[in-house]
Length: 214
Length: 222
Image 1 (cartoon, chains in turn orange, yellow):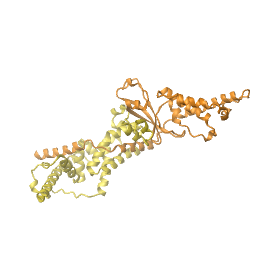
Image 2 (spheres, each protein chain N blue to C red):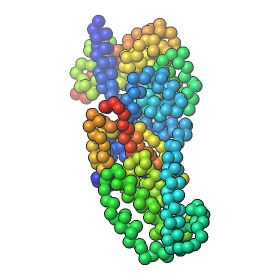
Image 3 (cartoon, rainbow over the protein chains, first blue to last red):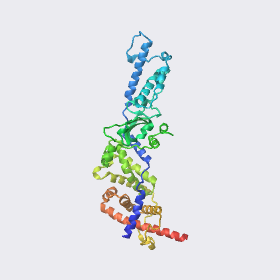
């Protein structure tokens, strides 16, 4: 009996001392990366539709400006009209710049507007050939439909892909990021999704609202 | 560095969570799913299910490997190998043959035993008469500080022959049921019981032997 008691005490001591031991956190990160690689999960190219819309909008604006600049000209269908000559806008550089400067807000809707304005303004201000234009941040305008942009995140090239990762974040995280949420719908943690580029850097975040209070 | 400005310097998602002090979590619905359900979802490419399964089971795999080898680096490597096997060869697990938890321990066991065989450093002594008779009957851990006692037990476990060591680790340290341990090791329940019984006896003798050796060292020093 005494032997059993001594042994139980010894084993209990070691068991209690090691009960909380676990593999280091970086192992989880590594395994999740291996999992993604194995299953090759890719985010749906949600930016594609917005990219097409932005390109169409640019062509439409260019066509309108071209028509105004050359009245009476036989109009080609919008899709065949070239973008407006840059020189004709040289006298009006202030408007796009002013639009960018005006929109300084952290609200979701106004951020979207500022980003859209930035994306449509950029081709008109460029003096080089369209094909030489630097890739504009796809994530910026494209994702305003879906995700809130994480401030100061580096831009992604249009051909880059990313992944959507479900997370649960403290409410104050959204405060820190300047993203408004319906805080009264959540108790403590907010279910959300992060859009993460292939480089592992998160670019966007969106809250998952359901009917149930979490 | 503020949270927002720190984000632009992040090179990966892990740093993002470290800096913001948050931890990504799988959606709570998975917390109620069984291991087998999580495994099925994971095999179909559900990363959240895999993450939930990993978080639920990785610590027991890690601790088993640590108790068996005494090496944190090896325990980490074994844990990684176990879950990589789950990712890359999901067909290797058959739910009809046993619980996933036992399967994971079984894979970990094979990995650890391979390393132990390669790294044979201990001579396993089964003969109890090898120990000082003066130690008989005394409390093996008396007069030791808590840390010294823990270390003594840990060393004693590591010196057990592997067959007895794994029975002690699974049943006593990890509190696995006999049936689960039998599934993991691949032997009948009766074999697990007898190995555990023998392993406990050896463990007690080793603890007393360690204490006697320690006392002899103190006597020589004084």
